[in-house]
Length: 410
Image (cartoon, rainbow, N blue to C red; front, top):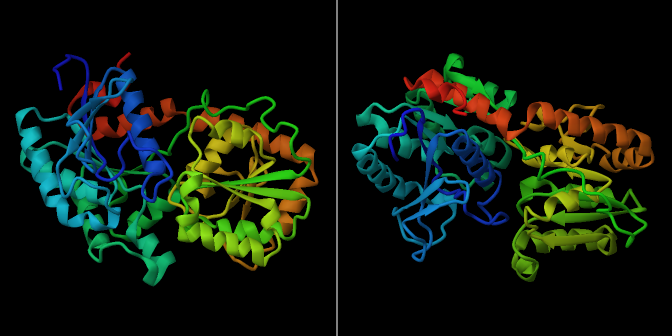
């Protein structure tokens, strides 16, 4: 990092979620987008941002500069191959030692860690240098354990480490009020917790005229996310049986040619056959972010019914495209979706008649239009990356002695 006299030097640590990664893989999702977009926004404000992520391919260069000017460093920690994030903990000490060496030469003004293992690497690497660390968890082990039980593949040390990181770092950024309650219940001090939501680019995610086309007379439901059971795609498929004039598009997972090697995709297909809706369900596989605004704009409703969701960027992206949302009343969706204004919140209870909710909305186009317009307005006032960067730099300024970090460098 250079010594620009007015710029803050920001180091971001995102051990498994590279800002360069293609979305849709098992560990590539909202965190990748958050890190990439926030880093780019801070760079546009004049700050110098370096993102440290684990090298998972021997062909990757040591350092890359993105078109926005963000520097991405591939840290050698563990084998240079893709690994599930839940298997990375043994390599975090090496990651932390590498960061300590790097930062001892020219320390950043603030470190922003993303996810719990990044937090462990960050506080360990920064400890001897006295560099303040800000932590964003993106997901919490207590929540995952509660909802997944024995299916939780997190290392058993996760909650203990999360708590220790939260106690050592200078500030914690929670993405929603639900997360604040979880953090306080873990024993972390409320005074150190700041709520800053995730964001969306409203120029990129905007209504696309004529997105629907003329190919289908059916009403269109869309659900989007990683191809994992907790996203609730199965619940949307079951509900479709009670919405006979609608089709359901499922966007997520690997590219279409590889989709049917996915156990979750096979399970969803079998469920669609069982409920007699296979002719009205389309598994799209991974959809690029460039295609997503058109896909969302072409839907009558976006259905986001995960069993739990730390923040959930999909409803915000849908609202930005002026598409109303039906969402489970969990996590960040409690903050982003205003029930009866931008969409409808439904319980996670499987006994709830989701099909009846969907039918009622599809039968009321005027209500859908009102929800869509209100959703777009809500995004523009609360969820732009500019607003997110304002909140994040406010936290940086609270823990750092660098004045420019508490606001924009224009």
